[in-house]
Image (cartoon, rainbow, N blue to C red):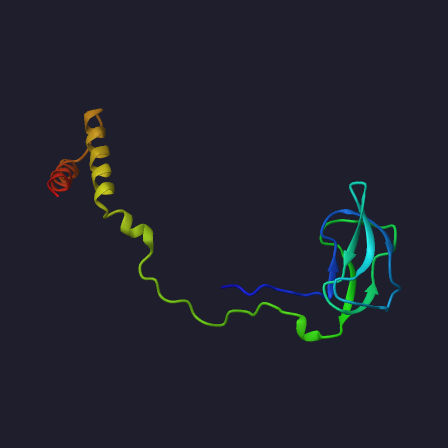
Length: 146
């Protein structure tokens, strides 16, 4: 239903931690799934892998603290066709008819509940016009017959 974005040109931090060192120089080529940097997360050292082959352009300096989503490097891909972006929907949605809440008032169980509430108000002493009491009694009779 939805197109997944896939943009390996932006190398971002997946979790918070510290950027220990780069394993390659700025402007150097890296292959697909090859490590390009080491990070420290919760006292563990981990390598960051390039998702695709290309040339790395360093943005964050070594030793910097990273938050999730921070941009670490950018990459010029060897094959730019690997980038997939979601497209804006330009069509029209189908007409769905009248809004749903309007239909709730005419459903049998809602009619019966409304009539019962009206009659409970009468029994507790509220002054209700005779026409509304008659309508509530008629609704109860009709709902019980069906």
